[in-house]
Amino acid sequence: MTGLHPLNFNIYAQFLNCTRLFSCGPTVRDVGYPFWGGDRPQECGLPALELRCPRYNYTTVDVGGRAFFVLSINNVNKFMKIVQIDLLDDFCPDRYEDVWLDENVDGRLMRYAPDVERLTLFYACRPPFNVSGSWSNFTCNVSGTDRLGYVVDESRSLVGTGCELNITIPVLGSVLKEFRRNTTRTTLRDVVNEGFAVEYGMYGAACAACERSRGLCWSGTNSSVQPTCLCRDGPHPFVCPDTGLI
Image (cartoon, rainbow, N blue to C red; front, side):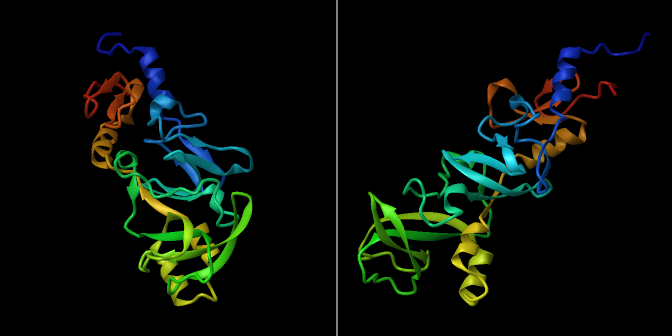
C-alpha cells in the first residue's frame, strides 16, 4: 500500500463533522460557516453565531443580547434577514433600549446591508406630540400604565418631543420607501415585520480560497473571528496543501 498518505481519522472525523450544514424549516437551508447549531458543531462556526431551530421550524439567533427570528439566509451573497422577536406582535419591546447593533462589537461578526434605515419609536408621550410627519400612535404599558407612543423615521427632527423614552430600530429602506409612498397598501407593522438585512461575509475572499482548495472555513477551538482552513489532514492558515488525499 505504498504511495498512500497516512490519515489521522480523528482529524478527518472533525472535517466530516464540519461538512454538516444547518437547516430549519423551508426558508433556512444548508447554512455553513460562520454559523453553527443543530447537528453542526460549535467549532465549525463562530461561538456568537449559533442558529437554533425550536418547535414550529423557525430559526432564531441572538445578536447583541437580543433574540431575532431569521427570515432568510442567502448563502451566496452572505446576507441574513432578521427581525426582533419582541417587536413582532406590537411596538412594545421587553426592553426600551436601542436595537441598533454596536458596530464596534457586532461589526466584527456582521454589518448592516446598504438598504437599512432607522426608525425611532417614542414611548410615554404627553399629547400633543409635536414632531411633524409622525406616524400612527399606539399604546404601550410603561411602568404599569398604558402610555401613548409614536413612530418617526430618521429624517424627522427628534427635538422637543415630550416623550420619556425612545428606541431606534433598523428596517429595510425599500419597504419604508413603499410605506411612505402608499400608506394604504403598506402599514408600519409591515415595515417592522419585514425585518432588516445584515452582511456576514467579511472573510468571504479568504473562505472562497479555502473552499477552492477543498477545505472548510473554520474557527476551531480558539474562537477566533479570523477563520482558518480546515482540511482533511487538519487546519491550515489559508488553503489546503496538495496532499493527494481524496
